[in-house]
Image 1 (cartoon, rainbow, N blue to C red):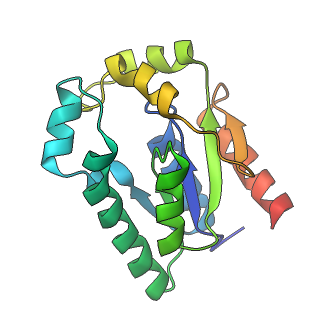
Image 2: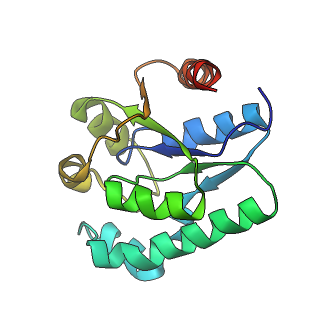
Length: 167
């Protein structure tokens, strides 16, 4: 599969969105976009201090991502966006900029993800915010759901297989 669909790869922090997303984009011949790169400095500082973002905090972040998605579409470039997109309202906002996004939810137990977050260095998202992430998660209807327990290459293969079936 090359030049596949535009994909929103979502889930709580620490579920592997960036790692899986980069490999998935490479396999599809698509551009990889990491939503973390679009956060304003104030959001990064807030999360680094252990404080969860509010919906109001997320507005400029989502607007920036949506603008980039619309730009990618106008350039006829496919993408894989790694973005928490925990709430339906966030996903709807992104889908307005890129209608027809294929949504893939990476799922794992709180224990596994907490372990991953604890071993991660140099990232602004702390394990202390994981509970708020799971509380905010609204499971998307119709999404491709993939467990994260397997090695990354197998997770990507599972996503590719599900996309092949769907498309």
